[in-house]
Image (tube, rainbow, N blue to C red; front, side, top):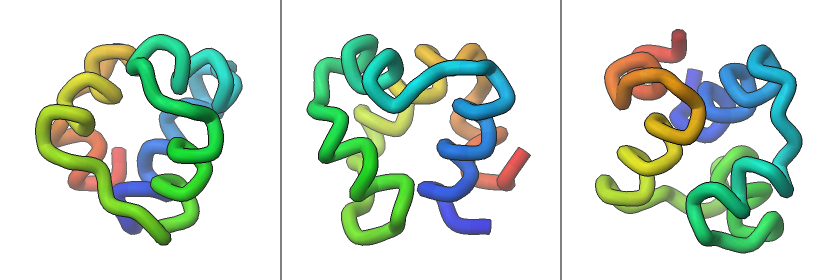
Length: 65
């Protein structure tokens, strides 16, 4: 599972919309959509922020939790 699909999977399991997550990490919904589709890769600091906003670890995202 890619990082983007992992983020989408965890986000959906938490019942969070793309807009909600994007607002929490100060990016646009469009940028988050591109990350989840795999057309853009998040930086390490952004990945860490996304993990915190989702209430999981960076490792959970990388391993496809």
